[in-house]
Image (cartoon, rainbow over all chains, first blue to last red):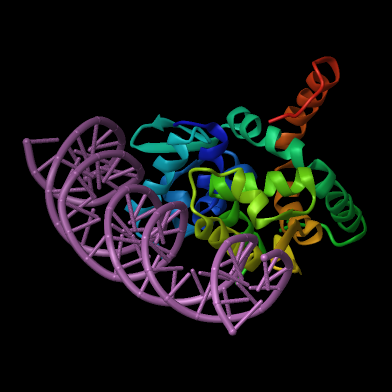
Length: 113
Length: 113
DNA sequence: TTAACACCTTACCAATGGGTAATATGTTAC
DNA sequence: GTAACATATTACCCATTGGTAAGGTGTTAA
C-alpha cells in the first residue's frame, strides 16, 4: 500500500468495483450476497475478490453479523485520498459540476449517473 | 471507446498518466520531449504510448508544430466525464475539500499535492 | 451432529497492460 | 540529398488482473 491516491485510482479503474462503491454509497450497509445479486454475470468468489481489493485499499470496511459479512463505505479514507487530487483539478471540473446541478434542479428527480 | 467514464478511470489508473495530466494542467502546452524529460526512467516510446492512450480516451489533444507534437489537456472532455461521477459522491468529498482549502489559505503558498 | 449456508482462499487461465527495443515516418538542418 | 531529430508504430516480454472452479472455515438450523 504505497500511496493512498494510487490505491484509490487503481480501485476505481474497474467498473465492477466502481459499481460496488456506488451501491454502498447509495444503500449504506450491504452484505456480500446483497451485492452479489447486482452482478448476475459474476461468480461469488469474483465479488469476494473485488471486495478484498477495496478493503485492502481502505475504501470499504466490513463487520461480521453471524455468518454474513456486512460491507460499508469508509468515507474518510475515500475522501482524504480523493480530495487532494480534486483540488488540483478544481478549475476544470467545477464549472461542469455547476451545470450538472442546475440540470438536476430543473430536471426530473431521481438517480443521477 | 464504450463509456467516457470508463475511459477516464482507466486512464487515471496509471501514475505516469496521472502525472502527465498534472503537467499538462499546470503548464498548458507541452511537447513530447518536454514531457519526456520529466520521466527519466522511461523510454521515449513508453511516453508516446501513454500519450496515445490519453488521446484515445479523449483527455488530451495534440497539434503539430514542425517536427514536434504539442499536447494539451482537453478540459471539456475531462470535466464532462468526471462531473457525473463527482456529483454522486459529493457528500463524501466536499467536506474534505473544504478542509484542504482552509489549510491552503492558512498554510504556505505553493503547489499542492 | 450433521447439513446447509455465507463467505473466503487458493489454484489456475486468458487477457490486458506497462515496459523496452527496433523500425518507420515525417521534418528540419547541413 | 543526406543526416540528425521528434515522434509514432510495431513486435515482443513479463507482471498484473479479472474471471472461474474447487475447496476451506466458520455459523446457523434441523
